[in-house]
Amino acid sequence: MATASPQAPAGWEDALLGLIHAPDTQANKVFLDTWHSFELSGATNNPLNTTQPEPGATDFNTVGVKNYPTASIGEQATATTLFNGYYPDLDKALASGNPVNYLLANEPKVAANLRKWGSGTFADALDKTAGTSGLPLTGSTTVTSSGGGSVSSGGGGPNVLKPFANVEEFLTFLASYRFLEILGGGVLILLGLYIVARQFQQTFLPPDPLGLGKRAVANEQAERTVVREQRTGEMHEARVAQTRARTTEIRSRSRARTTKARLTKEAAKREYNRGALDQATAEASPTMTKIRRQRSNT
Image (cartoon, rainbow, N blue to C red; front, side, top):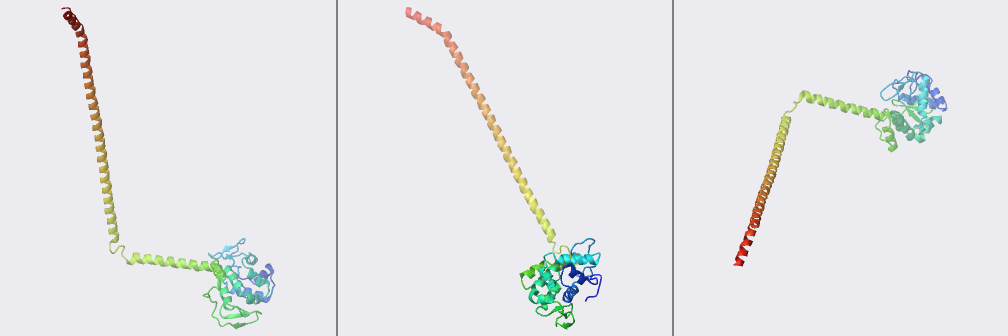
């Protein structure tokens, strides 16, 4: 049995097995103690590092592992997590009363459940001892199914580099807190390298050793000047063309008015001459008639 600690109070195995209605066997207790040995973190009243929210719980770390105010609340949180539907093979292994025997035929499924829980190191250790009649401990020992002793497994601890057996295990790993820890660590490392590189550049490298920045600025200003001059020339040509068109229109209208006035004046003069001729003709008509009569009488 494991030594009682703030993370794993004395008797937590019996209490948890009672809450999940699993047999209170030595094999089950050994399995839970072995699992706990891979989950050592220091979270209060939380032997298996669950993240289940409960009244009075506080965050132990950024992943969401909780500190629970009492042992009973922590045990209830662990039982609730086991029964949330995501860990059916863990439930079956404990329900069997002898998890080691269950592992002989279902180790990949139990390991996949453990990775989903976030216990990747325990799952890797189970993979390493798959097919044997024992459970791995942290280190190089293996606990037998009876829990009455240990034999050397010849290993050097969990094999965290073991390839995934199938796609399901890989997807389970992606959904685990272990993957989030690795991903977060990688992001922090990249961010640190970026900051170091920026500091090195600002400290040891001149800002623009070849003057490329100044040349680029000068070229850009020259291009802007050329574009501005082109636009100014185009605008001037457009104004000149507009002025010429307006001048031509004004001249055309002036010529039309002058021509119309001349034609009107000539028409008036012709009308006047025609009227004077008609009047003279009318005045001369009686005299001509009288003269014709006199000539005819003689």
